Image (cartoon, helix red, strand yellow):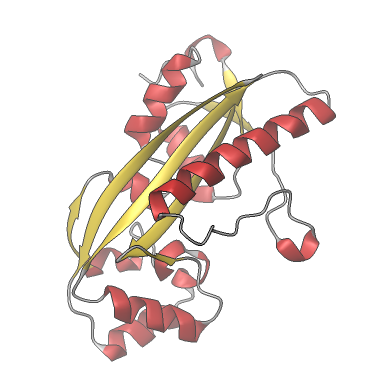
Length: 206
């Protein structure tokens, strides 16, 4: 638990983000917003036509924070800081989101094979009218992947709910030849940037 018992709301369904917050001793409660368009999502996550991946990640993280804070007010919940994040994988400035099928996952991994790609993870914290945000940028290089190992990896189902169709903290770790930047950012929550934001709101992460 955070020294002094401070806590925040985490507006994310990602178990990886929960584990990373626990890793740095942050006490949190989940406050979820709707992200499934078929169920009436709370915000539109479509990218603008000329929007760069890093711009998109920051905008969505901030939009999630604003939407989450409106839920705090609507539900008359205690006014605690609310943390959100968004991760975007891109290659040649082309977005690689979560694959919609096994075939799409195979296609994404073929694009990443033997090449560098970027992972942008934005973090935002809202409290009242204040929203503070930060962006982590990481370069990841995959070794050459052959078709058989791509199909084997996809058959594990691990990549099906991951941006870019892979989990660096999972089996796909063996694909990574080099990483420059934040490992935790690729997992889903860059701890360096997150801890700096948390300090602005009175949290200690030591």
